[in-house]
Length: 557
Image (cartoon, rainbow, N blue to C red; front, side):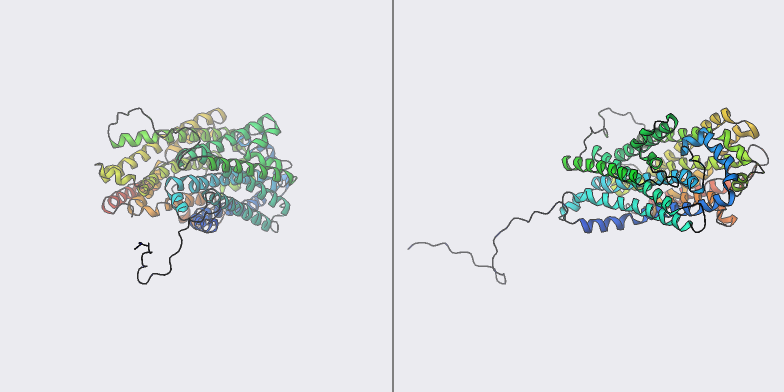
């Protein structure tokens, strides 16, 4: 008898056996559509939070210019002063002649628009491209069958679409205003919108490059923001040196190549958009060649040096040192820039000038008091942003699982929370003192009338309770509901809106008072301590509520 091999009987209920096949190879863009929809859903709130205030700013500014300076003749002193003032040239560039309303809008408001869109593109790109990889979301995405280019292309397309949305909305707003403000033109509106789009795309590409060069989201974000700062510095150098060819090398100067509301040139837009595409292609090439979770630059995130630490608070202070130095440089440079503007701008705020009546709707008091009040709101805003960012980092560490490890290592929740709060408060106090000192020192070289130097210092430092209130609200959100910690940025957003646009849009006085910015003491007269006392109480109550909530709730809840 010969034994013959028979196949094993199939299990009862099983269908016909199929030959084993290898999994089908996915294409490089497989799953791009679902990834785009998911990313849009995740970032839609952040994009709208950037877009709506910028559109509102554009909607308010041109009618305000026309109300204050309805004709070119009345606008001539303003134009001459702005062109001759070193501080305004450094901040905004050279004001185009003859100074029509559209030229004023693209010169002043356009500068804020370009910088804010650049910041938005930088932060969103680093969040969606590098931070998602650090958090393991890219690994989940690839494991679900997405192609190898999807983790790069999805953030690029979404961020470029967000930039296009902001720019397109700006174009529509300015186009609609042509029916109200006669000096605005449709071609100028869309020339400015095109310059904003090209600038935002370029900074998104630079952020994508930094995300491939660095190994973590923090260094990538820092490198991209450094590129933004260098772009601003190069734009200033270009304006002061008169070397027009340098404008091609800084996205913040591409607007001057397009010349919205003057020449409305289209061909520079095409060239600048092409440069942004080339930068993005270079980032794509680096993405295809680097390893997952890797970077093209050496890793500086760790060191072999041993720190002699005095405890958990000392560790937090050491970890915060690098970013504190970066914030110190930013605050000092901004304060010096604003101080250089005081010499000539205050002359426009006389009692008989149209500019004085316009600024008087935003602030009260003498011209020096009005101008210093507005300047210090902007410098203190930077300090408040630094403090709130330091607090919200605790919520980010909790989402990443670091807090759970620290608690498991024996650090109490109260100690962990108070250390983060203490670092935020100390850093904010130091930045306020630095900002006030630099602003007072530079102002002393430009203007000494009407207690200008003393007001520069006191107006800044006495807003410490407002910064404390912002930190306290952020601590309360982080301690009670860390998922809602992003609402602390809404507090700062409302404060900026109430201070700069509240009077223009007719907000009630009580609504304008609901601001963590702008409440300060004066060097003369009777001080009003009530707003500062209320802000201090809010800050301390927020810290206490956050501490109690952080001790009692579950982690990552």
